[in-house]
Amino acid sequence: MDVNQAKQEHLLALKVMRLTKPTLFTNLPVTCEDRDLPGDLFGQLMREDPSTIKGAETLMLGEMLTLPQNFGNIFLGETFSSYISVHNDSNQIVKDILVKADLQTSSQRLNLSASNSAVAELKPECCIDDVIHHEVKEIGTHILVCAVSYTTQHGEKLYFRKFFKFQVLKPLDVKTKFYNAESDLSSVTDEVFLEAQIQNITTSPMFMEKVSLEPSMMYNVTELNMVTCGNEEASTFGKMSYLQPMDTRQYLYCLKPKPEYAEKAGVIKGVTVIGKLDIVWKTNLGERGRLQTSQLQRMAPGYGDIRLSLEMIPDTVNLEEPFDIICKITNCSERTMDLVLEMCNTRSIHWCGVSGRQLGKLSPGSSLSLPLTLLSSVQGLQSISGLRLTDTFLKRTYEYDDIAQVCVVCPYTSNEC
Image 1: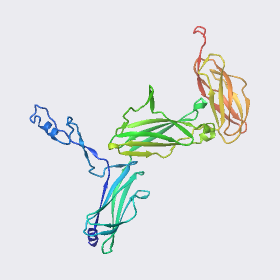
Image 2 (image 1 turned 90 degrees about the vertical axis):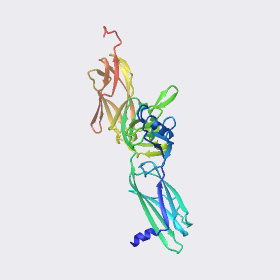
Image 3 (image 1 turned 135 degrees about the vertical axis):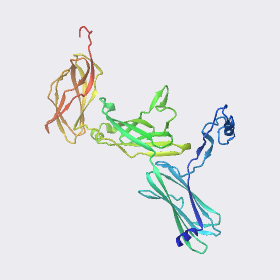
Image 4 (image 1 turned 120 degrees about the vertical axis):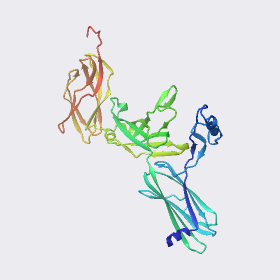
């Protein structure tokens, strides 16, 4: 009983209100045909209603704005804003008023007060106002703790607190997929393609202002979400970049190693951190939200101890005529290798030259270019296979099939072929 009386005897009143954007006023239009009994009565009432749009009275949205009627939903990445007011309800002058606002999350406690200094005095019917802001970076339960301490005219020090509990929800569902592209051309080797699927899991549409990829220090990024129309670039999603509730949008990015890292096969092989996504959106009346993912990780490509790629290969070759290719052999291990090259003929591919020749020693991380000559005895799209490398130090053999494909055509007439 004494505790309740002490609560009622506080000279100050604390009020807290969340600050959000207003919404457009909505109404439910009631209409009927002119030949019905009410006639034009409903239409006349709607035309006289100040909340309707003149000339479009049957549209549910009106011209007026509605202030928030409840706390509403707070989503991860949005800015939480709150208005705090301490009012002197008594007829006494109160001194040394200190208002403190803390936000308690599941992992930390944050001080949101703009000032930690006390107000010297507060006269009757006067108030202390403060607006706090915080960018929400955690999901789950949040508790806003507002504490007020003050001193009465008689020198008595009083203190009280209020707690405001709310949930922070997840606005977007982000899924990523990585594709390691190992090309035959040395200029575009080690490309990584990132596909990001972003789904709006809120109940209102979003305007996607920006979705970008911030690459790690070893990569340059190219955005593949634009198409060229004449001299201008346009988004693949159209001019109005809206994402409706539960809709999903896919973004594509291409990452290439920077020149200083492109030749370091061992370094690129071990890179798993690609970068992070930066997503900015707007909701009701331009209210902005922003999310940054954690560092995206991919499975490093498994090249093995030796990587074999093609630096040069013709697009089309003639049937039973020799043609040249240039292979690149890279030592991806951490030891020196002594390599021997063997060339094994297949049903359609025949290698020219001596099989079993010594290539010499190859130190870790280094590579060598190897010109080879071969011919095809079968027309059509043929797969180049049959190369074998042996490390004489460990007596370990590495076989390479389906290295590349080449189109074989007949240079003669159909009768001669």
